[in-house]
Image (tube, rainbow, N blue to C red; front, side, top):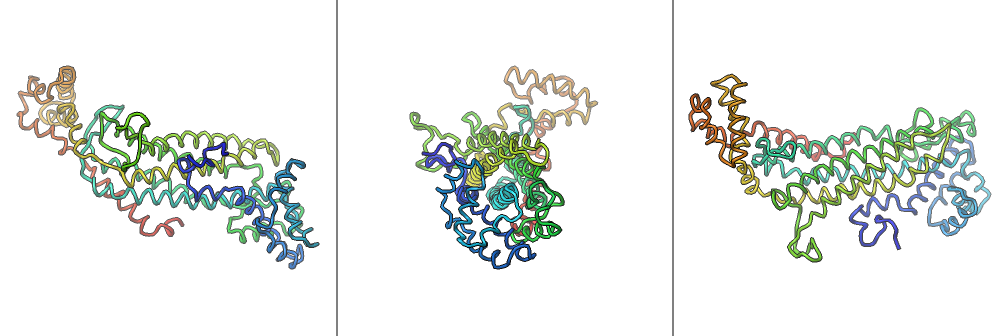
Length: 459
């Protein structure tokens, strides 16, 4: 039976996607360890450090299906070492004297760190794909609701009218920035850590840099300027990117969650016949996708904190910090895939209730346009006096649940200088949307450029 939701038959798809789980699957991890051993052997063979025939034989045997993982587990119980069991079984699988060249000059952290970077690279691609998919799913909202008027809220209350296209544009532009952050950090993060026991390359003599570079080339990773066994900023940055991205997804989900509340009912996450909200209340349409997005954000941000703590490595190596990454990196990427998958699905089928948005805009009987009314009055009176007059009228309208128009006309300072019709026009929310539509257009064009060439845009 599974202990973690990631491996739960019932819940695993709620917290992650299969493609991401496969990246960090234990069998995949062992294969990545072997991939690094293979690359080091091939590089050493090319550089004349070990026989080329040995390098070729090692490379041919570096396949996880040749390894008895139960035996690896048994070795681990005896040695308590993370890699020795796999190395012993790998050498057994080679079954030749060339097996003595396995792990030539390398240390355990060389293998595990570099293998983790291979897995992060694969996870990186999935995160970028999910971000692009979310942008693709959200893009139609900008066109369909460019001019759909709704209430803009500040401090939890009605402020001024906006359009839903503007709100969605702000969401999606934030997602674009997250995608840009991932792309900008790729080269900095994804590097090998083939450095030897303490980062001096001493076991490879004067060919250490060459071996590191050739190993990196074989694996398709970058080459760091200096050893990073004790410098965990790269993995911490990857986890921070996960937290930033999850934070954006959660913010969007929380907005949808709040605007879907019964009393508001402006938005609703996708619903289809068969989806059940409650085991006892048949009418419920619980916001499952947005709830999960918000929950996963909390976990991902907590894990980013662990990764930041893991930066406090002592001396040239310190497993008391390093090993925490083995837990939080796979978990975080899987959870982020779940978060972005839920977000993309929510945006793809988001229901927008334009009629309800319009109705809610009239809820305060004109108070939503107090700013506009103030500026109209300020055409005839000094701005401070206009503010005071509209403020007094707004207090009465709010407390008495009366139309702001009536209260303004009852305000002597206003009625003397402004006609009722002029104020009435000023209180029409559709006439005070500013550049909402233009913002939606600008963000839409930005997304169109990304969708037109998603791979090239990553460079």
